Length: 146
Image (cartoon, rainbow, N blue to C red; front, side, top):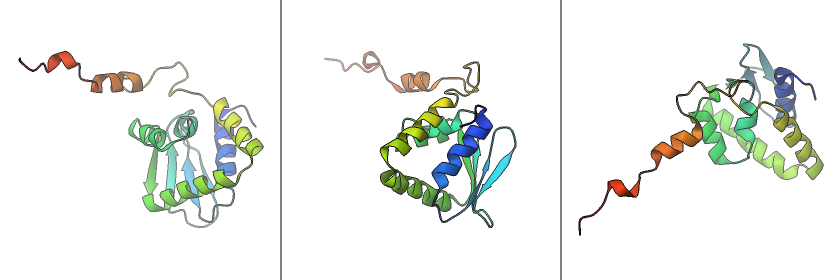
């Protein structure tokens, strides 16, 4: 795999999309784009920073996908149902891939940056951990009189 995040991201997406019957466009944080498949793309996957693909897929799970969307790591322009079809393809492909193939994909994902910006700063006022901490309500605020 290549060392720069743009090339790495394109290679990982090509591997993930292998066997996908549909097509889409991916637009990267540097303004470049690539078509996956042929024909008119029903959606564009917009990756907002070099670590976006890693944050979306690692650790693998629905919660991480939703969090990365909420925290503006990626966006989807166009047909959201076509994007969901691509996600279903990813799920079915993971069941068919062998353990070594999965490890190669994981290794490639982990080579991508793990944060939003190279210096660790986020464009958001709070980090994810701070955001969750803000949601917690201290029990001392709501004391029931005896």
